[in-house]
Length: 267
Image (tube, rainbow, N blue to C red):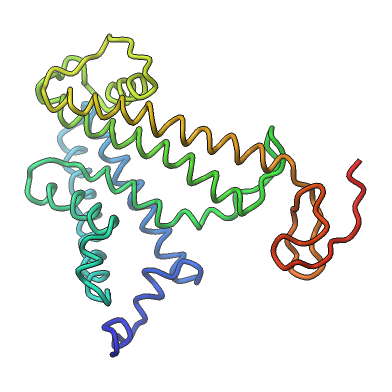
């Protein structure tokens, strides 16, 4: 059976899903930039602004969300299994971010930041020497994913607590920075106590933040340290067959293709 994407004059799968191809990389990078712009707009709007500036930012953010709504419709249209797509994490993120905004309930478009997980493979170029040793392009992707997980969790919790507490507790949660400060202090279990939520939903979010801080953050940081320590034990021994650059310092065969590695003095 021919899928809607294959019947289309344009190969939509190539643009929407295949980030290893240049058109897909360009489109997904553009989407990532729009997600970042939308998140920055949300942060800026928490500060005192002139009416004209605020209106312009609201219009820009609405245009971005319309683009995401169109993209969501295209992905749903080309999906072979529409039910599975509707229940997929990225589909649910899009719905949670877009629907409340257009319904005028809450602006939680900042949860779109999770969509960056879809394009983390674009960060393969992240490699070089660190204080722990050389980080290959493969390890760079993994390190980026770990660091971004930490950032995304803190960022989304900050946005949620601001949206919940600012309307009822604007003296303490004045801007996004106040919410970010509270989220970091709470999730790291420092808890200075100078900013506290007063609503029931805000307190529930605080409990979830503490649980996340106790479980997710040490886990992610532990993975980060293990990955960095692992890369510090690798040396530059290019494989003559597949050109894989880095191997364990006692490796005799390529870890990718199994070719015998040239002798290197590891002293």
